[in-house]
Length: 88
Length: 141
Image (cartoon, rainbow over all chains, first blue to last red; front, top):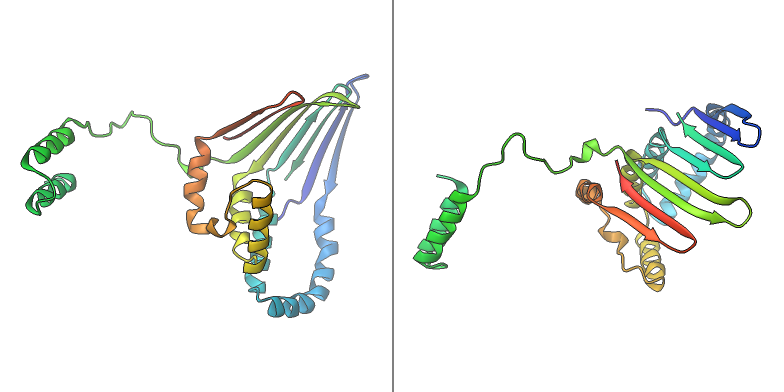
């Protein structure tokens, strides 16, 4: 399993029926975060040792949370617009 | 001999129940029909895929607003597993903060081994909150 790679956003304006269909590339965020995560890893390990957390197990848990975001859907229906966000 | 019948006879032999009580218990067991293949089964946790939160509210700027959130059950599982990495001091603070808000909940009781049971219970649960400004419904599907 991988973290969600795309956020599909649909925005419909009810006044004129215009529809916007946007694919947001979330994988770019993960790619940008990866070097930062590697730089931060030694500091995170030190903090984990001080606080007493099993840091690698916790990071594994965090990865599981990110991977589980696949399939999350948010739908907002208002008088003027209808918005749907779908993580895939 | 079934396990139930054996237990009843053992209780009778140990003097925990009288012969009349044993007879009544055995009769009750015999009356109990075996589960038929067509009978409704309790919800299996692996069939519950999503937690659905539906909010119907009146927004002061945008008028009536309906929000529908679908959260994968896997996220709930992963989140609960992540709670085991919270340091004990932080857990105590969380418990205290929730207690102050009137929520009598112990985070220490949230363990991965209790998770499937918790999700199974969620399958039977529907939370309906009816407020004059908003209606909230939480259920599993």
